[in-house]
Length: 258
Image (cartoon, helix red, strand yellow):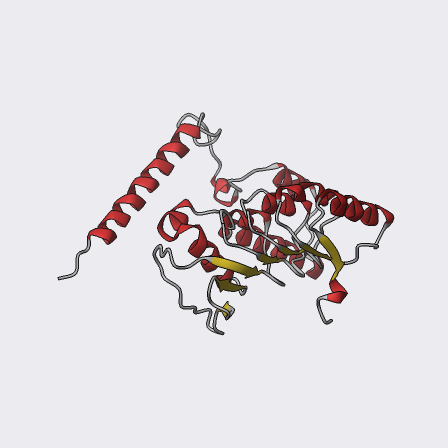
């Protein structure tokens, strides 16, 4: 009969990680919020209160109620973005079970991207139903060589799922509208020792963001909208190429067909 020891080991590991996370959350909770203490008085309207009363919530409460179609659409879009940011957060359990290579592949394929593995010339994508054929446990034979995140609703929180990809050579964020200088900084520090091609065209990255790219020592090709878009961009691109002799910065219209 086949042994269930690996499955039992994973179950025990997941249970232990969950217990540690719960313990850490309890330790970080240094005081009981006002309104949750037994001696505090609470109105019945508390049912409609926001448990995350941040500065944005306070500002919202001070504004007059606007039920116009434009305002409701903005509220809905912001709510959907907040949900998506939460869903993209780094999950330690997933990386513990899958390893960084397969965890990154699952994350990108689930959101409509494409992945190419070492020794496999074909790009893998999810089907129209969102299905894809990848192992659901760690498998050392799967090494990510290339990732396409083009046109994906990808946020800063989700970039932490792309880490420690030792064989990654190609990475594209083409037309990822939420990708900015902060995102580029996170990517440059995510341990991609063999990354050679990086596409950040169609994003919000500015010339100021180039300063972090020195961490990608093997980078050979950087694709941006237009190296001569502004004087600041042209100067920053020239300085980056001077500091990294193997690097060439090209405009997106030389690579992509629009």
